[in-house]
Amino acid sequence: MSKVIVTNIGMLATPQGSSPKKGPEQGNIQILSDAWVLMEDGIIAQVGTGPAPAADEVIDAGGRLVTPGLVDAHTHLIFGGWRQNELGLKLHGKTYLEIQNAGGGIQSTTNATRQSTEEELTQKAAQALDEMLHFGVTTCEAKSGYGLTTEHELKALQVIQNLNSRHPIDLVATFMGAHLVPAEYKSNRAEYIRLVCEEMMPKVKEQGIAQYCDVFCEADTFTAEESRQVLEAGLKYGLRPKIHADEIEAIGGSQLAGEIGAISAEHLIVCPPEGIASLAKGGVIACLLPATSFYLGAVFAPARDMVTAGVPVAMATDFNPGSCPCLNLQFVINLGCLKYKLTPEEVLTAVTLNAAAAIDRSSQVGSVEPGKQGDLVIWDAPDLDYICYRMGSNLAKTVIKKGAVVVG
Ligand code: NIG
Ligand code: FE
Image (cartoon, rainbow, N blue to C red; front, side, top):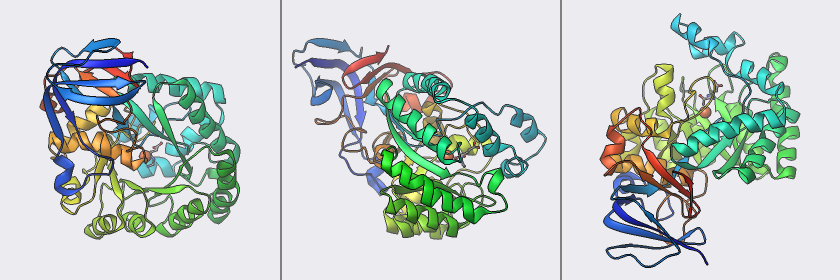
């Protein structure tokens, strides 16, 4: 049995338990000084303070902050090309939906993704994952959604599976065939939805390559009724629902999330009070994406109202080539404090335990406790406030995945 110990931890900050934290519990984390974490065969065996036990390998944290490895619970990791051409359009006043309706946006990335081979997409996403790992991310959700045909959606999910076995970051796959009605079905939306539900989903289930089904419930994209149809079909194929809701316009997505019992609802930028009530009632995790608000020049989701209403809040990057070309979850941490006015403790829970719960991984990761995976970040920081306060630098010094140093 290989024993690895991280010693000389100035501050160990971690949420506790395996269930998502809501209300006042979201900010109720464990803080230990002069701590150590002992891992055996990649699993946390013991956490303590004071004199440390012996081990085969000692990692000296040098009095720094240690937290759980970060969990990025919402990314559109698999895509061909980029969309830097849209920056100029934005600067000339075009909105996200105007660009999308003119054939840019998701459709243009879909064209590029269809032209990319599985190997090309794997290489490109691996680079992004390397960068995420350097920022302290050790578990990540990844969506399909830029293929929009059976062949190309399955290709994207296959890429996620390839990367899960070759990259240190653990990946969780979400099928998002309902990201946009592609150009060739614009005059026959019902037929595209049929294709998603009756042709793509059975194959996704047969190949066992996704756990979740997501839909972009948005003006000019999928209506709430269409979204319900897609998510209910997903449930028949064992895919748990997630939903992009209230990102630009509130058209009923958050209410639907609560009614259908989605594991998480994403964005919620313009979530109305009745949407928040529905999330609370349905036990849905709010997965908030503040870097997208920043990039779209939009308002910020009513995170405090959600905490007050007893909705567990997670935060993620939403990494994608259009509305958020950003892989840096540390920037999301800054925005969580500065724009949502969450406390550093609430923010830490949002990017660790609650994010893990949003992808059903909270019994394995998301906190530093015996029995969980040895996924840790040693920060170039003395305490938790510091990583929320500094911005623009990468403060992750050493990243440990399953008990092994993978960065630093
Ligand atoms: O979460 N909203 C839908 N999907 C992404 C954007 C995708 C894109 O613009 O390529 C999002 O913002
Ligand atoms: Fe998204």
